[in-house]
Image: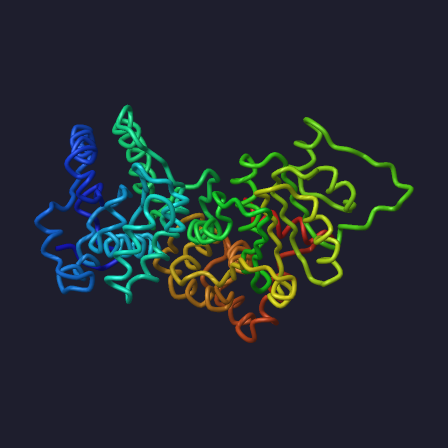
Length: 447
């Protein structure tokens, strides 16, 4: 039985989570294909499933100790949604995903992921009956189905080329999970986030809110948190990763740069390649009219950074009205109250890094290594505390201390130890001497 410790090395490469209707057919072929490629794989048989007398039985509760793999392929079928065993197992798999112990590849076999997500269509009746039998589990299961439906779903109804396609995808996931640059093994994104510790976790959480499969007319998403916590970095990474899914895309550096167009101003339109060049760059002093001509009732990704007033939101509301169906508008701000007042229902609050992430980020900046040298360990721990786990401050402080000896570190850290606001201001004062501080900060954020 595998240890529940996050540091334990999984014994297997792949765990196949499935129901009885796919286990003896497609899943058995997939098992054979993976094994032939040298991918160690395991699954559960019918006897084990029938031993669970209820979804909360002592046996089924042991799942949290027995998911012993790097990747879980979850084959969601009609029978899967009628099985208390499978849905309990899905909860555990998603919990392991959340803490970075497992990659998850969902395969929707003979069911539509939108129906799975909303418990409608072909899955409505079997899931309803199961929920009536176990009402105490109904809400938790519904949340798990929403989560798994948001994980880059793949829809399959036949077996032609299916097994080979899944096998190749698993091979890619295993290569990703083995990279030292991604020790927690979260779901791979298009954008490379090497050196941006914690961003893989943040990106996954943001993707759930963005829900690219939703048919919602225009979805507003808020990113909020204190200064220096990584809001702009997260927004920029998401923008670069997702822009290919939209007809047009715009990133506005600062909401203050949006101004109402003068009636006499020439109506500049952006078409073909000109839109592409303009929308991929950070914009300055852009009019609402120019943005409207770009979005033009199309499916658009619009990111507006540094929102800090209701007046700005009024201009933004005017622009949002021009966005087409399935557009995504991301607002970045330090003030969560603004998002609440603007009725933004999908909000992600960016918190400080975890201890391990903060130490790795600081060490990367100070030593170009993911861990500090032994002689600098205690000094590095002090530096992380001084920087309050804030990504920008960690990178600035690490860069400032780079190349100094232990005595130099001690001298500088003693000067900085004190109140957080004073510390951050002092660090920036030491590190930035040019007039245009904003561009220097961005160079630290986006290496």
